[in-house]
Length: 464
Image (cartoon, rainbow, N blue to C red; front, side, top):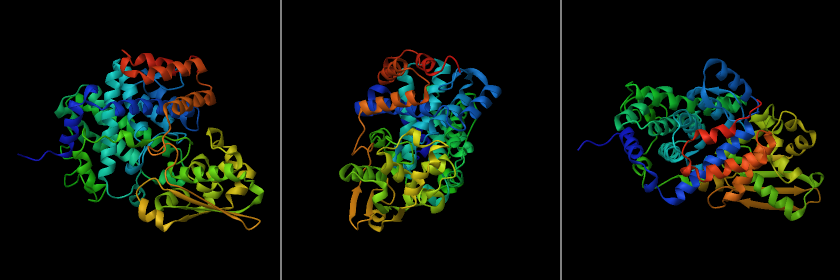
């Protein structure tokens, strides 16, 4: 019997998937992920770059799909583009640590947009979302080289495939059409780390592009359009071209047997996940010793190479962020905020707040380093952090955090995630408290919703 291709394995999983066959804990976590995505999006709908994307989508592609926080309606692909970009703007969206990617921000915009357009049930959307998330996480696990080692961002690079198969499931495509959709998606694959290094708004745009492209791939496949059958392992397939042959298909073989959604983590702070252990460690020390900035001589933060490369270099920029993206990806900046204010929130990542003199003064005292022990044990995972604070009186304080708040080993519960959504709604002033509470209740029982449009209609402002 001929061995199945990777695309066939993914299509078989997607085609057969039903809510009754998915473990209850996976279903419950998936609903929290949808709510968490909406928190990120409603909080970021007015962030830098969001209005520009919305204005362009409105001009180019009017339709009947909602953009979160706006009254305008556009076509499904452009709604996915806009909502994916908005949802990634705050860097507040969930993470699958071992895959080194953000799953929901590329999958949720596609299924919400297409689901609203086709007026599908909440159950159909939920199953399609789970299929997309599981697929993108398994693909990430199959990659045996870190994204920054080869200059990519896996969220967008792999996200197109996840959005493609999720959309294909939602559209009730046949098995062969699902395979074609993945092959077409390969032609859309993109996502580079240069946008991160330079701190451009295109860093957030790449999530929206992946969501849009995956959705388009499924729509093309539904018309009979074809794509590569060996899009992943072929001679010029994805794993050989992009990942340079550094892959292992074992995780893909486990689709539908071992789920990855239970291992997805949520963010309590709107910045790079790789900064969160150092933030948590500083918050522990501040609370324990009632630390004051003027009594601190130096703060040394030890992390793995992945965290260091993304959040500590170039060090001058990380200590003096040029823009919001620089601040979101900075150990010195986020540690300084945590030490000064005892929290890290959305308000700390605006054009004005990142220039606060008192924050930059403390950031100057922060020295990130690569901790060899952490690198050896946790090189491919969310980095633990060791924080050493040297005081002006000669005293030295130490703290180590292995799992940041929001990881499965240190989870954020349903109440915390509902509050995250309510707080983001309050911050953005996009929804009233009552409106936000009603939406949260709908998402947490989404499998009972008959028409996804009932949810999306509540996420738009009537006056914008």
